[in-house]
Length: 178
Image: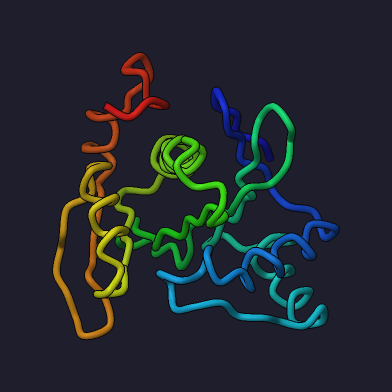
């Protein structure tokens, strides 16, 4: 699957993208705010790929964020643990540390949420962020997520379909920050 924006595109990864994903997850600059880098073996990456991507599940969607012009991956965007009764899922989005602030993350988030809310049928997106990830919390609030509570492990942000569509409906130039 491919979802295209002006400068970014989301695409379902192929098994040949696993080396990129392993590098992304092992990169200290990329993973600093989300608990630090982690390295996984080729075998463990393959075991992750099957339930998450191919054949996947009805509860998760995983995409690479790519630069539209070059086609090169610059990060990942996904949602996980979709609950059909609550119509909710948890957000994951990461842009490589050295490629941040180029607009790919913002546009990828709009593309992912538009797919989630308006194609997949989700109703609420939840983003549990580490209490120390203040920059991530600010970014979610600027985007339109509302703080919905906190635990010792996470500050919970959520965005409902109606709010997303008010802010980013087609025709409101969703791929440029306001």
